[in-house]
Image (cartoon, rainbow, N blue to C red; front, side):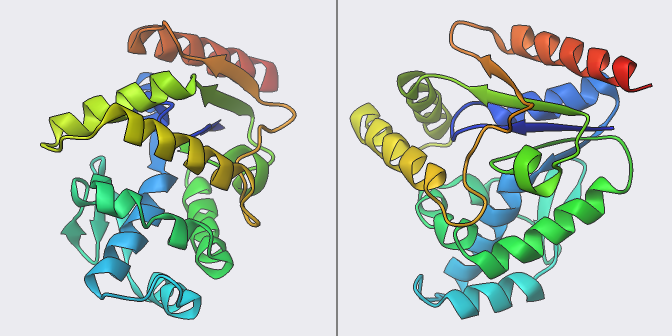
Amino acid sequence: MIVTIDGPAGAGKSTVARLLAERLGFRFLDTGAMYRAVAVAALRRELSRDDAAAWADLARRVEIRFEDHRILLDGEDVSDAIRASHVTAHVRYAADNPQVREHLVQLQQAIGRTGDMVTEGRDQGTVVFPHAECKIFLTASPAERARRRVDDLRQRGEAPEFAAVLAEQIARDERDANRSVGPLVKAPDAIEVVTDGLSLDDVVHRLAALATARKGSAT
């Protein structure tokens, strides 16, 4: 069974998906981390953000894999490096690149064939796994998502301004919705869950109930 969790940046998809996978006994796939890993690799090689062909070639050459909830880039643990602000500012050059996305989608689909899985991203229920048994669209208000991003960055030792983070959040929402490949769109058969005012445990409990119900109806 595949459970997809799509939604805008800052909705808490990665954390919720990881905990949901643990509760269900499924594997967890953080697809956003894959695009971030490509961005890290490109930044380290000082690739021009406008050289789409070089980014695509790099994505095909690097090894990206998951191990014990950590993401490895050519064998190096980059789980923390991919969350830095400068990586966030450049990840769209991987996510908006059709050839990069095509390659990573193929990797994601291959992982999906290995067994039960909870996967999160922007296009999991629409493009990558359109026939998933359970699709969730996880969202929250822009202000709530920006607040969470600020808290996360502060925990990482950065000192972001809320207004700047909110402005970037709104700009990123627009880019994601209007992306030519893999745009952020709610699948017609996805269940929308708004997380404002809900605790993390409340959200995971609700999604676990939805996934269990869908699994029961599919058998």
